[in-house]
Length: 440
Length: 85
Image (cartoon, rainbow over all chains, first blue to last red; front, side, top):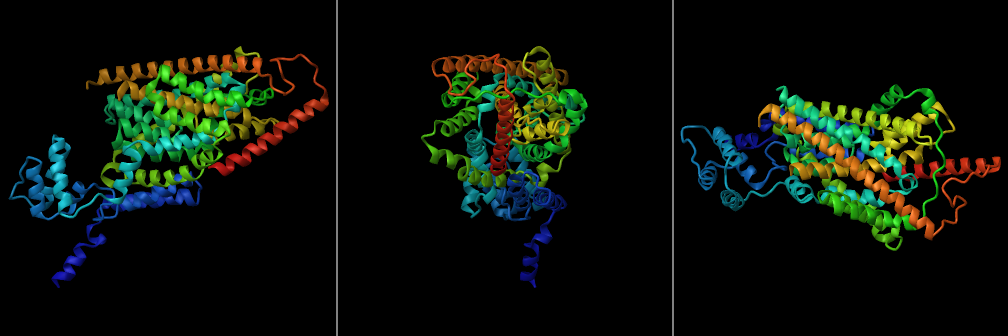
């Protein structure tokens, strides 16, 4: 009978907390969106599944060895850990309150040495880092996964349209207003006492407006790792929603006549120009904003591999197999941040709301900038391509093309929209560099 | 951190960040134009558009060509980008 009881107490059903159950449902919802609605399936499938794995009770897949030991360890071990952390446990209290007080000890003011001793104790007792925790450490804490993805994106990006019409870079710059307006919005919400975001967290939330998954993950892993799960989910979910969010804003801000503007054919761009471009960008980054060099450096490297034409194999690996491998690891690692106690908070709702506002403002700023440029420049510019300034390559450019075709079925804006689109990638990486410089 | 201070700092970061992004991309536009100019001067592209704006009257046949080219390149691009993500 005793053994039966132990088995029951070790079961998931016995240990399932309400929060975990809710998060499993959230994970299933993400899987549903990915599989049936085709919302960025490449990322939402691993993220959703990782989220479910992270919330399996007692398994502790997303926890470090120490967290796990505290979560499920025996009383003797807990006492040892407490003394290693330089505290003591109230012998009258029950074991659950021991666990909470140990977590508090770890959260406030345990030195690195104490933590190391406690970790050694936990490992000695047979607890190891959880699978997802390891993925997270390797892929995100080290910062490597978003950067490798950025390299792959660089290897996939053709800068031809941008080089043919460099002024579209301004559209990419304008659309980054979404990032900073959202940052200010987050700060405003916390100063009004509705939410509680620090400046670092506000900056990490703002980056959602850059509509660039790897950049968002990179910035939040540097500035606000505790919000990473919510930020990554918001960024990818809204990127998938670009075709729904953008067109109403674009139609609202432009007249039918403006949408019908045909743009002049782009000039052909020589191979040499395409090879020089990544090097030029790299030099500018090195000179003016070294903090953006991890992101833009990898981006330029990927692009150089693509354009130089002598390392086909490397370029092929960077844009196919490597980016796929890293995407799996990145998705699972982000999923590990979907744990109930950190994800189920008012802040998550705030992040979701601010994220969609960020997209809206970015689109608006891009379109308005394009209208302004159309007024002052000799070459006609269709305001719709301004909306492609939020990165989301190549979705946003396709949306601009589609809305343009609705007004004039012979007006193909796709190549013109690719210019601001890739400019948006550079713009959001620069914005990320500024934030990290200012706050990091 | 005091609330008004936080708000001020947010505003500061917004102005600084936005300003920097614009300045950086403006420099990029400038250097790109310069670079393209130099390269096209010393290594003229074989394409018919050698100088910036040629005032040649376009024949209807050429217009047709341009349009076909645009359509084809759009289609190729769409096909490629579909395979990408």
